[in-house]
Length: 432
Ligand SMILES: [Zn+2]
Image (cartoon, rainbow, N blue to C red; front, side, top):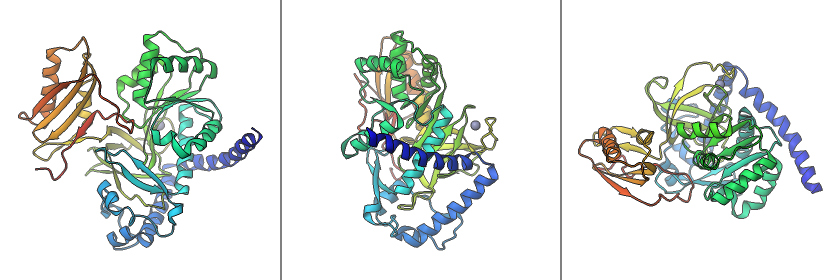
C-alpha cells in the first residue's frame, strides 16, 4: 500500500508538469498550432526517409510535398510491416499492437514508448473536457479482451488504481451485472463514464426500463471507439442527465478528435496531422488520412484509417482554436461500392434504421456487387412496410437490380474485437 501511495504521488507530480505543457499547446492560437505541426511533420518525414526502408524507397527527397506522398493503406502495412519500422529502434523497443480491421483480418503494427506516453497525455487532456479530473472516480464500461487480459493484467490493475477507475465488462452486460453496477455507482459516485456507445445505450436502456435513477450528478460521459448514433446519445443524456462527449480515435494512431462543450469535434493537433482526401475538404466529404506525429518506431504517414469526414473552417465558440472535424461519417468498416464504381458510406445504411421500431438489431452485408444480405433481429412492431422501405433504401443507392436477401435471426453476435459491425462489405476495389 505504501508503495502504491508513493508511486501514485511520484507519477502524479510528473503527470501534472507534462499535462500543463500539453494544455499550453492545445489551448494556444491557431497560428501556434499550425507552426508546431509544420515542425513536427518535417521531423517525422525526415526520420521516415532516413531510417525506414519503405519510405526511403517511396520518397525522392527528405522534404517532399506532403500532398504528393501516396497514402499508407492497410494492405501496405500487412505487406511491408518490417520495412515500415525504423532502424533506430531495436525489436525490444517496439510495442506490438493490433486492430480487428474492417474485414475481420487483424492488422498488426508497432508503436514506441514515446508514442504511448504522448497518447496517454492527450487522453488525460481531452477527458478533462468531459469533466474528468485526475484522481476522480470514473466508471469504465469497456471490454476489448486485448485491453484487459493476459500479461498486462497487473499493469491494468495498477493503472486502474492510479486513475481511480472501476470497470464493467462491456461485452457481457447481464442484468445482474448492470444492477450491481448501478448500486456500486451510487456508492462510488463516478464523475464521468467512459464507454462504447453501444454499451452505454444498453446500460441506459436497462436503467430507464427499470426506473433506476442515480442519486448524484455526473459531469460527463465519454463515448469512444464506435459510431455514436443520435438515438444512443439522446437516451444516455436523458437517463444520466449529463452531456455525452464523442471521442474519435483508433488503436493505430491514438486519439484523433474530441467533442467540446459546444458539440464540435476538435482535432488533436499535438499528436495528429489530419487531411481529408477530397478536392475541397471543407465542402466535399472524403476519406480521412492520418499522420501520427509521435510514432517514430513505425511512421504512419497519410494513413487511410477507413473513416470519412469533412472539415469546418469556423473558430469554435468554446474558445479552443484547434481545427474542427465537421462531420464524421462513422467507421468505414463498410464503404460499399456500386457497379458504377461509386462509393456509398456504411452510415447511409445505418441511418435507414432510425425510427424503425420493428428492428432490434441489424447488420447489412454486401456479398457482391449484385447481392446484399440484411440480417435482422425483429420484434412485435415489425411490419411488411418496414421490409419494403429497407429493401428500397438499399436498392436506391446500390442499384435497382441488386438482390436483397433478408435473414431473420435470433441475435447478431459481437465479433471478438467487441466493436459491433453494422455494415460489412466484401466487395473490394478490384472485384468484377
Ligand atoms: Zn469547441
